[in-house]
Length: 355
Length: 263
Image 1: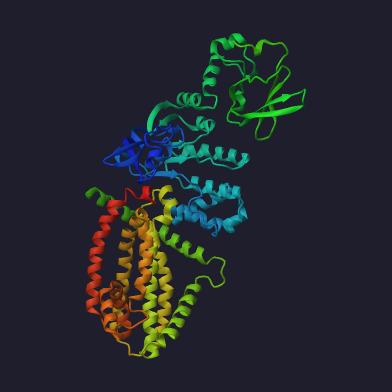
Image 2 (image 1 turned 90 degrees about the vertical axis):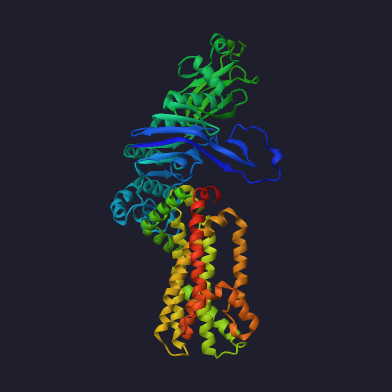
């Protein structure tokens, strides 16, 4: 089993616009390169990209918005035809780009399952065979006899996910498939994903959820301007990507220099001297991987609390000048508001001194 | 070009094997349109019958022909026209309306063309039933020549498919084309002998002869109403189909790689 792309290049032609000068010649960090050939301008979405996947490979695609992730997935799924190069595979490729595609609001749950099966190229008999397991997984019971518009969003999501996964092929390319959904169902999806991931033997998935990608991917491809920026083992590439792109990206790299401590702490001037950091707060909550956290500062004197921002499970926050001894830093779990770490800035500590 | 044509052939072959898919999609399209109505798809019959009745009553006053003949002339002509018109307009939007499908799955494009064609035939089937019922009032005696209407209807099917293969990609690429065709069809209705007989004036007869729609209508209406097989009209229609088939192969093959960028 294989899925390979050889030197694929894909251009999106640009319509002639009257206000070209506005952006002509400006190089954007996002999107593909704008090129001109024979008077026709186009965006080079994928640029001479090759990859080779075999049974058991699970490839994570990462990159900025517009770096070509979705375009690459669509080329692999046979939706876009590359201008140069070719895509080959020995099995049918299933693309999952929009789980709700083809759902009819007015038709019943059962009817929708049948339609989605037909879309996936299954025969009526194969669909009938899959029906019991799908209805069991959705847990929708009698609702399957009712029209889809009577479903809540979450229920529709359950149906979409169950049907999509039941009718997928052995080679699977997916775009941001995890989507929304409540925390409970999300866990159920991940559970289902494991069997799903095991059933399909080659998977290519693009997502902005690093934690999720780490849990399923074996390889990772970092795209930039439609080109391979880095390609290799998942952890290596994802670490590098995370370090560069996280909101406190440079700080995280320096955090690595601070060691592998866990919890929440104030790096000493000596520790900071190595990393060249101004006074800062550091945290590394290894058990809170992929949990959205909120950083707040509490001032006991004025009994007020200030929300600083949404943060990842590890990070550095350079202390602003208004921070005073006695103030308390807290990290909350953004989903259930539980405090996961707190730290009070001690009196007369050297932490506020510069390196 | 040759590899494109081979790939096109594969597309059509796959699409034909996916017949249960486009059949069900076409049925769902129709169901969606009439869902939660009391009359359901009988609305097609009701609205067509009422429309024709009013047209016959109003325009019959101005026509010199006997009421039974004129009524049947309008019923058959308008029934055929309503299919042609909605098929042409749907052919234009076959890809545009399937945008999420084209960007979300690798289903071969002919599926969307066949879906649009079948959807129109399902409606046409009901209209044909009304037309058949109207033949009860046929003033002239029946003869086996009326059966020539059947190959005429087959030509409608063939034309629909190649026309969709040409118009769907071109309208997705050039959005003005869709509006131009929609407007053109509205104008064409008045220069096609449906509400008027071509015999009433020399100039109108001239216009009717130059209008390909006249010939399409005649190959079905003439055998049913006048026991006559219009040889001239058949030649025109067959020539259009020969050119259209070749053109559709070229357009489909030339556009299949670009459709996903255009929709």
